[in-house]
Image (cartoon, rainbow, N blue to C red; front, side, top):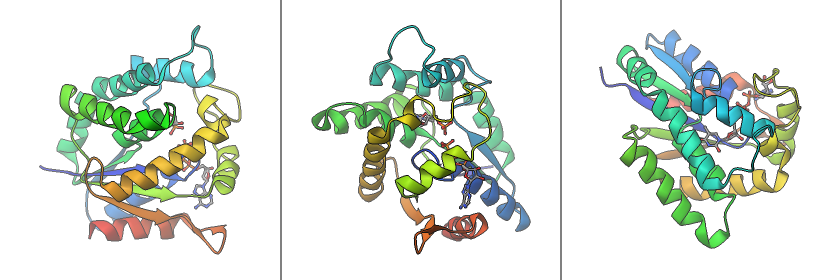
Length: 220
Ligand SMILES: Nc1ncnc2c1ncn2[C@@H]1O[C@H](COP(=O)(O)OP(=O)(O)OP(=O)(O)O)[C@@H](O)[C@H]1O
Ligand SMILES: Cc1cn([C@H]2C[C@H](O)[C@@H](COP(=O)(O)O)O2)c(=O)[nH]c1=O
């Protein structure tokens, strides 16, 4: 079975996990098989464990953007069998973050004139060297910074840290640059087709089920 690969992307606290779960629920209600695969897989892979330590700030040394990119790609590479099995068993696989996350976040941590090269290098590493499949559609959940910050505080306790904000979430400048990168990637169609879905209306969060329905409609 050829499954449709849908990537839900966005800054921290954009509402990706919530939307991904509801998209799967709504797809199943229409008779399609669907499952979420969430990256990083903190408790399932060596790369995921190392990323948890990096985000918790407990790694002994700082991690360069390129080294971090390799760890995120490694987490997906280690997940290859799980990914292929999920694809074989489902009409739609919904990624709660995928390769575009690596491109948006690591390009946000290098000089502006190196950002495009960083994105191209990551795309080549993951889809070329590591032979990971490209998404059929990436959806950028566009959530304003102030709202996303509030939603991060509502998140459940994480496996890798007790802190309210991990290292990337605490860096508001990084989050702003990540948003800029996502908007540019969606416009340029990097990695394939994109759609942008706003999660707010009149300055307030939209209902999660309504956001998910807009995403499901994109597949139809
Ligand atoms: N549209 C929404 N309206 C109200 N609350 C929401 C909405 N979307 C998500 N939330 C809540 O915000 C919190 C964070 O949401 P979620 O985990 O989906 O974000 P995320 O983008 O996956 O975060 P991260 O990438 O940082 O892990 C959760 O407690 C969730 O219930
Ligand atoms: C998959 C992936 C993630 N990141 C960044 C984005 C977040 O700040 C953290 C952890 O993700 P979570 O959704 O909060 O659990 O890691 C990244 O830089 N590159 C990636 O490939």
